[in-house]
Length: 375
Image (tube, rainbow, N blue to C red):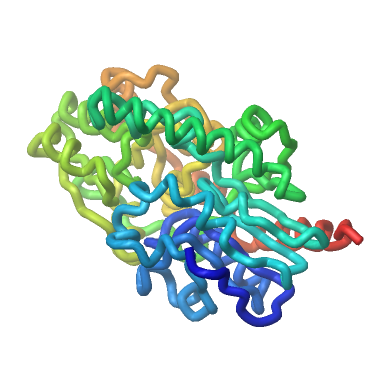
């Protein structure tokens, strides 16, 4: 690899896994940029123009992986290169390092005097409990799956070994804090990510009725369950998002399923407002889409696992299902469509996840971390 980019003097840097679109992690990054207005952003891959102006206007430095062919679209193909790429950054002039990580960012190498606060969206999913969803034999074949298992086992060992580089972990949910304890043997405080409740607001009542999914189209999201449930109900289902699982999902979808692709913020808000209910069929680490939907006054039907148990109040803001089968999900969707939810109460609950609350709590965490800086 090329020599590390040493750049100019700085006291704080923010390290983000990759910048290839605006998702929940990038909303966290926007808040961190407001808290650290002079910090540079370091990232494995930067696809210019794919994130908000607030992020794009910062000095962004990407790793050599970002210059590889097709990296912005097929970055998962370069997973084996991520350890060397994230360790390539030279942070000798940084006193404070803040990583926002669901893959490799937390493994950046800070200077000995620096404090490193990691806002962890999840320990590396591919390497731990989501291997079969991404690299099952039905996707890669037996030989490919065997090779992937070897690579991911090495990544899991590296992921665990680099956890001591973090001074303090902050998890985006209690669910993720438990995973940090399990895989890293570290304690994490919990701070739910920010939701722009000033932007996501209620609108006209939904008509005609339509269920909604907002998600990356990747295997562990289990969108096949939502599609199957909609088919059983013969109910309209709109899927917002893109990802590598789209071809498979389109092949199984019926006539009532619409793939809307990626929407801009205004169109996404309109989609929430018009939804009978948002459907969350898989286990999420936190799940920002349900809170955005609730901020728009719309109920959520979700699997009673992971982050949904921390955001959805059964009977008040939506319904939780214990059974992940399509039949059970269909029953809950049908019930949600027939019930009369109080949009004002749903909205009031969502406001507790607002951006100001996150930034105030995160500022206190960073201040406390600075007070305990190593000598």
